[in-house]
Image (cartoon, rainbow, N blue to C red; front, side):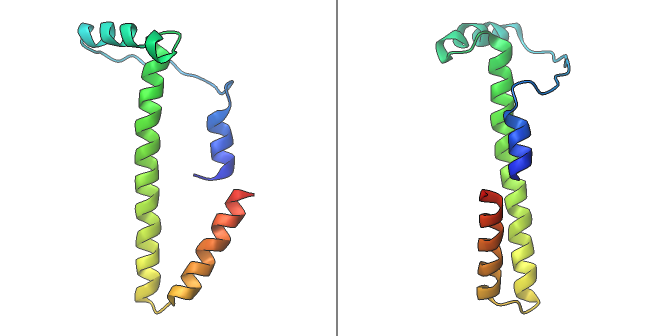
Length: 97
């Protein structure tokens, strides 16, 4: 994930929207019971955390697949491993700063 996108994700004051979702009552009761044990103020922040964890994992997986596909395509076109490694290092350094 790009640094600027990550900064936006970490902003506690980012805009929120209401979402309605139907869930089994026993699941909601379990969420209410486990939320304080995990340090959450209620079950809704816990649900947001669960969704965020899954979303981040999927974004990382799909973005990783895109990078892997790009690298494979470059190799098929004759770009050397050295050039690809140098380019990846350059990108990692740029996003780290």
